[in-house]
Amino acid sequence: MKFDFKFTGKNQDAPEDVRERTEQKIRKLEKLLPRDAEITVTYSVNRQDNRIEVSVPLPKRILRAQVTSSSMYNAIDEVVDVLEKQLLKYKHRLKDRSRRDAAFSEELSQMGGDSDESDAADEVVIMKTKRFPLKPMDAEEACMEMELLGHSFYVFRNGRTDEVNVVYKRQDGTFGLIEPEY
Image 1 (cartoon, helix red, strand yellow):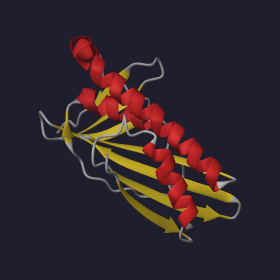
Image 2 (tube, one colour):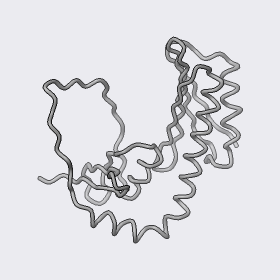
Image 3 (tube, helix red, strand yellow):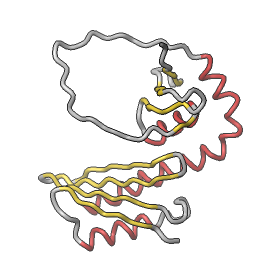
């Protein structure tokens, strides 16, 4: 299988031996990765912290793993472990999807739009802004994407209504869906 690796570095370029080690470790996941996968690897070093971020675009999804460690080699090993867990989870969910479709959709439709209101702080400081393309998908796919990324919420474009929606993980372990009301 041929993988297309793209290496970038923040604060410095990664040495060739680090790049080779990363390729070697990620190639061990070739049974789980799609053919001709484009794998983006970003290295950064900040004082004693070595960080590696790996992104793998899949059909309708992007797997992303980020690890910070005192050693770049340890970070590589850990990020590959995280990716392997995400890929196994993704493959498992795809296999179980047909079995879960009816129950999952029913669970989502029964959930209300209950949201806890909290008091706003006197001063709001936005530390980081992220931009990303909104791909049309249904709420179930958005929940699966959220779980794969390990996030507590996920913003997506609803393929049925073509509006921006948010799915989120509730404290009781169920999912919530936020739809705009005009």
